[in-house]
Image (tube, rainbow, N blue to C red):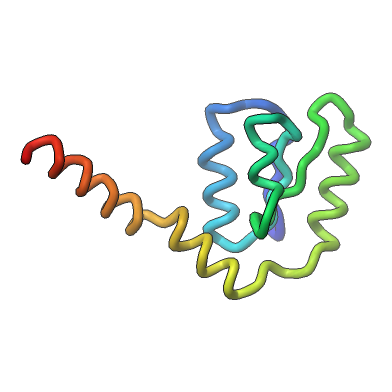
Amino acid sequence: SRIGALPSICNEILPTLVLEMFQQGKRCVVPSLESTNWLTQGDYPGHGANTRDPGDLVRAIREALAAPAVSTEVRTRLRILFGMKRFEQELGVTVNGLFA
């Protein structure tokens, strides 16, 4: 797929879908909500859509498809930011801190 789209406020799969798309360097359409707007800011390749407006979802999908490819620099940064290696390192620090 070229993009991912999560046109609902289904918070159970939001983190998994968005992190997977971002880690792969793909754009993702996310609900335009206070809790998810940060995914559309800066160099995050997210595109917000009003979850109650099918026309706005179409607009966001078209915008994501027409947008330029995510740059190599951003893809690398997102892979590091959302990758398992970082998660494993942070988990190790947390676990080691519990038993120190």
